[in-house]
Image (cartoon, rainbow, N blue to C red; front, side, top):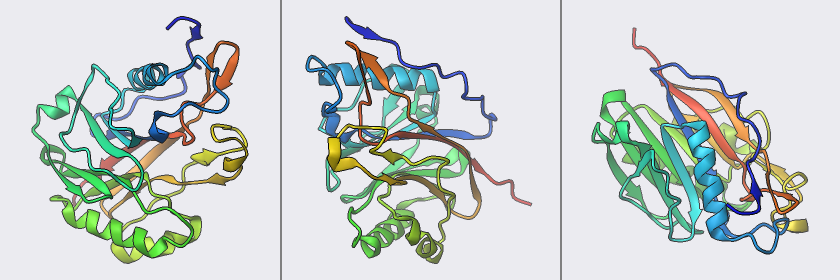
Length: 251
């Protein structure tokens, strides 16, 4: 890509166990251009950054939210054939060629989620984009409950833009979900000027949650900027979240 430079090193990501599934969630903000980006930066440039990030991180499953009707191409992954529209943009799930060969099944939850069941792993992965707003707590819990019901497996990892507020975590236990906060905010408008002054707050909107017999570990917030044309900026207002999901051994 003319005029651009490769973004930061990824050596700090450690390999995961072969029994674990590596999940990446990323809200792509309709592939709009950051207010910090150079004027010549376009959607095709952002797609190239997304592709290279995925190639470097090597997730097994990618969960995108807020897509503008297009899905970034990554040659190492196939797309699950479901693109439901949420309250903002579309959802999409990509899985590695190896996982696609295991013939996963999937279902869509209207305006909420794509749920992909991996029978060989006895695990379902739900990509969610939940209701926004401080007053949307009840709607978000309902959406999560419906999403869990759509999974064929009792073991579910929920990843995506949950729009959850920290004080809503107690309500998660009532539907059988739990999950630690990521180590850093997944929205930080003080470091990421994507939306200018409108985004000057911090939050943990992108989360990883799970049912009782699934363990979520090694959470990493992907928050390094892109550098191009003497500008430093992010390709989305949300930072991506990389986690490891493992189904606990039954005794």
